[in-house]
Length: 307
Image 1 (cartoon, rainbow, N blue to C red):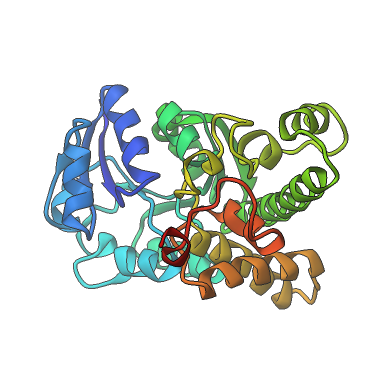
Image 2 (spheres, rainbow, N blue to C red):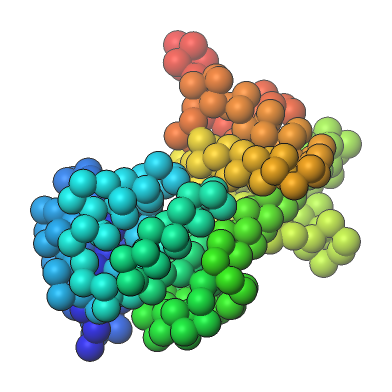
């Protein structure tokens, strides 16, 4: 049995921590939002009131926070992980953050004698709950090898990606491709409906043809076609639009650093930003279909429409 500190117990962190409990590990959980942390207690997580309490005598720390600023605060801030954890503790950051922040965390951890890996994930909330996430793990070879046994209860795939920050690089590129595919699904779904095609018939064709993608199979933005689509639930978030916009922004920032232009990613960033500007940052990112067809099936009604 390992003692694992889990920092960040939101939509992804909570089911990931629950899988650690089911694997027989002792899990101490902390989240800056007390209500979120307390919800994890129902899964068997020992909820504590500070990072210092969580990391005491821990074999490993797993962080799953929304943004780079949050990761910096968790590791480098006053009362943070590097201040209170023992240097023998393995540090695993599974947040999706910018490459520079990941490098800074690697450097700060190494300076204090810690092993640290950047290990972002793919697979969404459903993968987190099922324990089938893909982990992209970057860092020193010994740290990556040590992380595998901690990651295993949460994962379907563990893929070493290379040295420091390579996990984040892989995740940023992957998510950029995902959201470009989602935009294609939204455009294809609208055009198919406007041309008179039944939504289910068209989806059945696309999923066995060259239009297939993970987004089409899992997030197709039309209600009643696939069970896992947010469109079935008025686009309640499985992946919030503001977080999707953040991830595309990370790809664009990385591209700027290396002198590459990403026109499709720029387009998708604009589509996601439009939803945010309309006040719906908390809706599922697949609601971008609304930008193409404001009358698309499954969209939540506005207050004006309900009157």
